[in-house]
Length: 260
Image 1: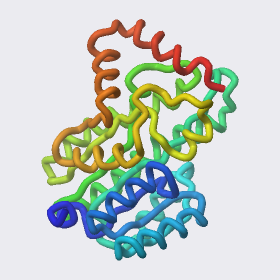
Image 2: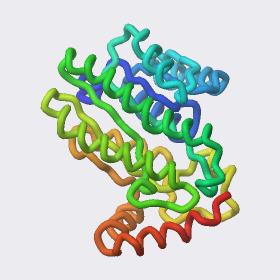
Image 3: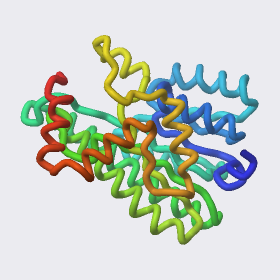
Image 4: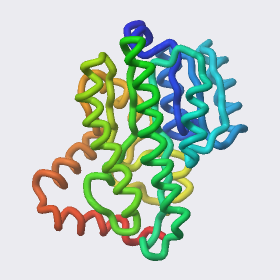
């Protein structure tokens, strides 16, 4: 834990931190002794989470209500922080669901802004700071959905494919400057949003948010990609290695074409 704090502390930024997986990342990092800067749109949830973290882990916590669909605002907010930030966890995501041709263009722009432009610009901005300090890390949350196209989630899947490839490239490039990058590819996660949407059955391979956060943080400095959960690891092997691409896309469609 002390080695982790020395390398990635004393401060970490979590983008998309109000609940669910963002909350799990906040707890995992607080347990490792890092002070936290929490970004999300919902100020009330951020305030409540920040107080719990202060009480339970005796860490400093700063909250910034922020809409990551506005990349310029996100860049400006990061530039305002004078704290010694050693880690960025980009967890924010937006997923338009439904037929692509029926999706409003504003939703497509929001998905690209939140899932692609903001993590790219923030990673670049923090990388310059980490290069100067000589150590640090970046976590870019991706998804198993990004390994092949998915009906009714085509844009989301495409943005997550981008994050996976960006993470792989930065892992190789920035490691030469002592900066660790990992792109966790998660399947279904038990979060409030997921539980609100489900109809009584969990998707195969559904895992707890805490497992995803721990797997991601444990992967820093070791590998560019991590897959939380053994069933998800097998599913990725099946879809990428054993099945023809066309078959993998059709199999994915069986799970996504009913989404509305």
